[in-house]
Image (cartoon, rainbow, N blue to C red; front, side, top):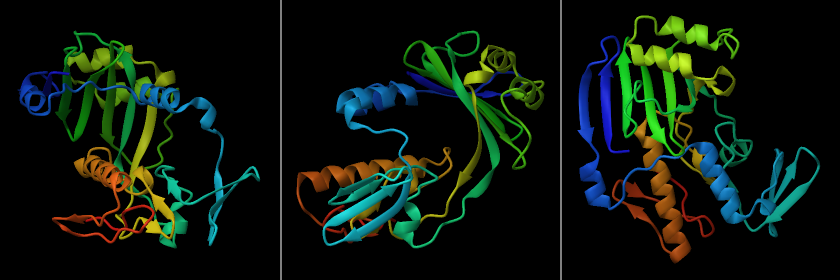
Length: 270
């Protein structure tokens, strides 16, 4: 990916376009996005598929002097010195850490996303392109394998009776009159592999750790995908873990102090 651009929703005119070359020069690496499924596949291959168990749902967490025990809904258990709960926005471990179950808030819009083959009549193959207007957006990002990752965002009420059977007609209606590349994208996508998500978030928490149990990822900071703070927090978490793995230390950030627990290395975030 070499450029980013924003375009007018009806005419398709470029509103702004900028090169990523300064970023490449500063970091020494060019942005090369990959799909989530591909990333997960690479991670499984790297760490070993035989070490990962699927279909496990946490039912109960317990701590004692021996460590942490987890009971799953299938009746099986697992024990360890500590537990890292990276179980997503609907985290089953989060209530144990917080002591309550926080409400998820509807952010007021629906997101459709998926993958299509790159077509330069829709957008350049080396550019992240976003059409904006009417409080909506359509975005295409080049990813590996000669594909675009695409998404549509539309402000809508919660709970509409829409699914894959109505998907193309729904998008056609919401984006009627938009530029020809948007219409071509709607025609090219596969409804059977396109996701429809009602976007939610959760208020930030004061603590992400209880005893020897720590929240990580969306379990810890379930934000809307268009908020850069989510990415920033992931990087700060990653930095924290790198430092903690390298040596035992107390981490202090410019925006305030953390009081890391001995096991996880962090307790609070700004």
